[in-house]
Length: 415
Image (cartoon, rainbow, N blue to C red; front, side, top):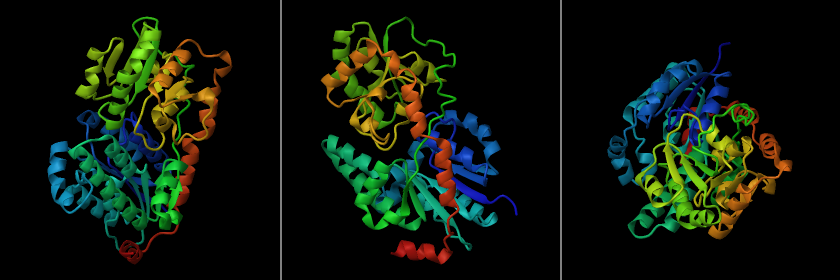
């Protein structure tokens, strides 16, 4: 009997694994490729990622990676949005992608579908003449993020965000019924979804992220990226992502002046790709702030930082930026939202603070010195809690459950 086929759908090309969703999707792709013949369908929303297509071929039997041009996606999604679809999903409307999914399912008689993110949910429900086992990885309760945005917004944007919350929550519930199993990245996210949809509890599982301790290893040589010795604070993340933008802007306006008053030589480095104007302008507005843009490797910035900050006011699930910093054995000062999903908080990991004054004080204390007894403890704790091997074992078990007969899918959706 040959290697079984699996259709792997992702809203973004899972390489390079340099941001939250791509880290999770790549590790799952890597692991699943050892057990299945993978047919990968994903969108490329950053033209710089096109150079990485060849890196994915060893993992896949077939690939379909169309460009997703934002303006074209928005235009294609207008009819779906007018029908009440979430705006954040409507941009993924793509006729050729849908055709490729249907052809692949039939040509290879694919009996396992793994859809990564709710944007891929409808594609994974393409009709087949044979039974299919379907697993949806929601990762986070994304609709909750839009509810949080609405709470912060004013004027027309508040109404837009409220609409997105309502429509996306309805879509998440629909997909949870249609798929055999829905995954979330943490027990906290799974419980949140259950509170909103108690009748779907038996279909929901938590499958966590891992962290690559061999790669994020402070014992490896990492050239110092900073121009001179000083008190360096680092934030890492995609800097066109609204939650990251909001976080660093809030930090610079509310926290950074207090840090600089206590430590005049302190420097804040915002490390991440595609910084929007609101982020780039921070380097001109505030002394000691640097915006790097995309870097080839974040590890040197983590290794040589005095502290890592995670000032996220809107966050869902597990923050890979926090995991990676802890794997590099650096203390993290973050908000309650940034720490959510990482299990029981331990003060040795860093500080959990929401108020600007307390945030600044915690950073100053960390920059003034870490006790030797903490060396290696953060890394060991996080390695015990987050393992890609364990997560993959859970995912494989769920994919190998009973397959869903074609008629059962229609019945589930009808309910």
